[in-house]
Length: 158
Image (cartoon, rainbow, N blue to C red):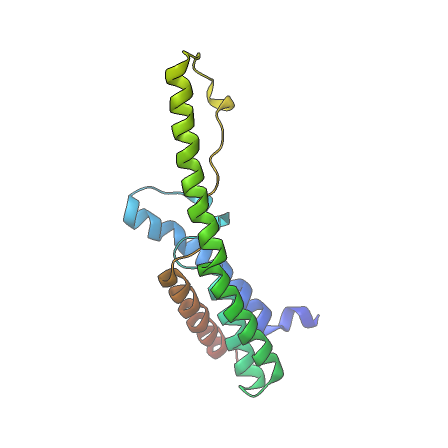
């Protein structure tokens, strides 16, 4: 039953769910389109990864103190996750963008070279996912949301 009273775990999970949910209205405000697939997708504003790791570190700091080895582990792990979100994963998304453009150009060339019959919708290829990583501002706001949500939960629960 200790699992149900593990505040750092629940703060991090709550932060993930909050960040994923809030992506839908934020995207609606900017694009005027509701995209429910954002609830389970990677990338976007705010970063749920950043929110989770900062919520975890904040909750551990509140419970164990800033001098705790657990806080050190959570903080260093969080820094690595946020660095990865803005570095490797973002670069993978940029590569996906270039690859998708190359595929489109190749397809246009093939269509001009031959008069292929149009394919049915279910036969069309799925594009590589371009929204893999985060821009630094997305990581920043994900981290802020994790910290603030954890502080709010801590003061409401304890």
